[in-house]
Length: 390
Image 1 (cartoon, one colour):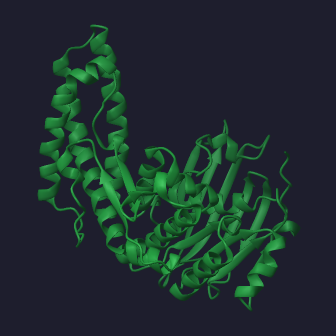
Image 2 (image 1 turned 120 degrees about the vertical axis):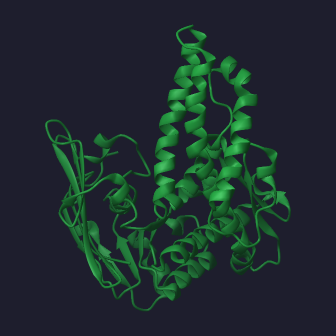
């Protein structure tokens, strides 16, 4: 997959911006002073992949101040095909959002997956340190780009989860009965079992390759692994399969049975707390190094090596399922990686043939020249971007 053109209209600080990318050049650098909106360009590409920003859930934040709309358009080469994707974001009276492929309006489900990305930025270190919601999102971002059933299940599960919690409050207030939970439990299980099955598969795939990838990066012969943590049933926390396979109908049915039992057993607790206490919305993943949790025992360098290993495995995961190479977006990663890890990341991307779009400051060009003789640089300081106000 190659991005050949990107245009932004009234997106963040970019009033009108047109960028051409060389499809023959795997590494492409966006260089400019701080506050010129380099990250905004990567955010726009991320938006084309997932229809959401990685920085905000408020659409109005993406539309330039005092403008009625923002538009992001891209031209992509996928094998022998050329496709054009467009996202329109509007303030009243404009339409709130429109998604187009080759000029035709399509649904979110059909839009996601046309532009596939792996995104790496400094705050990704929080995946390993902070709350489980970030690790669940990490799994979701990978899988909704690849599997439409996963996208549908996740969308439905979130809606039903909210409705079930609302029903628990209605039961407390005496306007509904406990028997009303059965229909919502059945739907929660239907979609939650599929989410659980795919997440287990994803982590099985990662676990199969994680140790080798980590050892190549860290140059240390240390054991690295990942474990899936589910509160549906302790049996789901068993060691991940050595030879991962996509979820089967039988596996999903088995998880449904376990999930149904767990929901029933948790019902008294849920009625008391007014929240659904079991399900994939409580999932987590635990990364270990030398058989100890990295959150409390790993050094800063070990954590960076492990995160880099995960990001490189995302590329492998995408390519394994699509036979295409996703775009690799690197936002200011040079500030978080030492020279050796920078060099390894760039060489891996270049050898793998992934189109890699990298943001960095002008001050980093000397570092780049130490690893590459021919640099493909787009300097956005001369574009129509308005410097961001602090």
